[in-house]
Amino acid sequence: MSRATALLASSAVVMSATAGCSGATGSRPGGGAPAYTVTPNSPAAKGPLDSLTWSLYAEPYTLDYALAYDYPPNTVLANVCEQLLRVTPDMKIEPGLAVKYANPDPKTWVYTLRPGVKFHDGSTMTADDVVASLGRHMDPATGSPWGSTFKNVASIKKSGPLEVTIRLNKPDVLLNELMAASPGTVESAAFLAKAGKDYGGPKGKVDCTGPYELDSWAQGDSITLKKNNAYWDRSLTPRTGTVMFTLIEDPSARTNAFLSGTADGGYLVPSSSFNQLRTSSKGTMYFGPNTAAADLAVLDLKGPLGDLKVRRALSMALDRKSIIKAAAGGIGTPSKAPAARGAWALAPEKADGYFKALPEPVYDVARAKKLITEAGATGRKVTLVTSSLAPEISVVANAVQAAGKQIGLDIVLKAVAPEAYTSIFVDPGARKGLDLVITNGYDNTPDPLEFYQYLRTGDFGNYGNWSNAEFDALFDKANAEPDAARRADLTAELQRIAVRELPIIPLYEAPYSVFLGNRVTGAPTGIAQLYYPWAAKIGAAQ
Image (cartoon, rainbow, N blue to C red):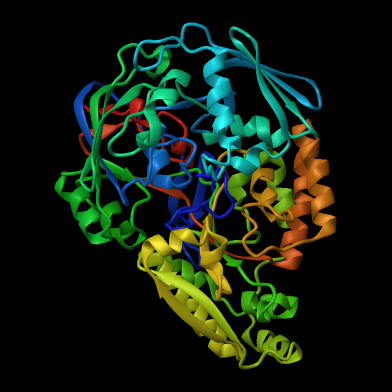
């Protein structure tokens, strides 16, 4: 999700997913024939389906849009709730529940709403619903992880029956872009008022505007959606009557569900099963555009990793190609920067130049060991948290521990339960005693500035409390720049600072993944599925 956007998503699961542009091709490690092609969509559906079964790797902890900050809840909600703006499968931002927006001055955003849109209960969407929906993020009682998105907001007010005006304390381009993600979701104000504490939970409901509505949630077993016959967007009229999400945490069991046909498909396929599923006659593996990258986030800059030499040494000691082979099924590339190349969809024509200007990741154990000695850090203890939340986490953790041993760092692995691992990203107290965590940081929008906002001093996503005055000033300048090309240039400067200072140590990027059984097709293949109504596109393959 984004963590909201999130740099380092609350789920921080290092699933095997990576950056890529439409039509991009990756190569096998060491060269050779292309290993995969990145495309934003699977072939279009040829007919309708009565029902579809979709596999989730974990049960959503909520279906409250204001708290949805991870892959499972957003994968479901993308089909149920909608935003003022919409991210398309090819990572563009287009009108959604707002038909247009204006920025009459740097501190004002005005949204003109789409007329005649109905909530699932049949009531009509108005400006009052938008004001109530967005305002929940700003209410401390909600506890929204997206609250920092609204940090510069002075007011959100109805300025007409179908118009909402947001006034700011200072310019904020990202706020507008994030109206295409959870912060811009619109729910019925009347429903919110009566729903109470059960809103978005297994005992409650949601009342949004999407192509599907929530039918039932059997906690621990499944979530079922049913087609919204009154959906406003005729270009996305659902091809399938009902969608059932099955909850399968075990990677092997999930793979078996794909192969047996008990699950028609699923996103974020276990990388350990890539080869098996790619050669299976039971369906097709697709790789799509991704804004995510696997990183090591520094949680404590008062310990050994507070020394830049130690951070550089650890980065230098990592054999990224071997990590990709073991953790990502060989599908991916070493990262040059904390934010993936796929996060640069805002200015793809400039991305090549930005990344060519960055140094290649260096693998030099001897030099790394020398840096540790110079820093006086030989034998120092570094605690890296690990978990059974995803197999990739353990694989990467073991590789980092081995790298530390080679250069003289005592990297201790601390295993925690999946829920405790997730808490690290939302509860500062859960980070006590920890130095490093493996993350999967991704953008919710096509703008890489979204990722780098989480390294600003004091930001919610700045888990290590890194602070750099040069970075902060440059970020504010970029976030006030309405021209996308100029903003991209400024973001590239932020990226260079992050690569130089390493508050986050880049690991690898991989494409997004989806498996579709033989009877279905039409699904978007990339990370845009977190907010795009992807299930509406799925239908019969024949």
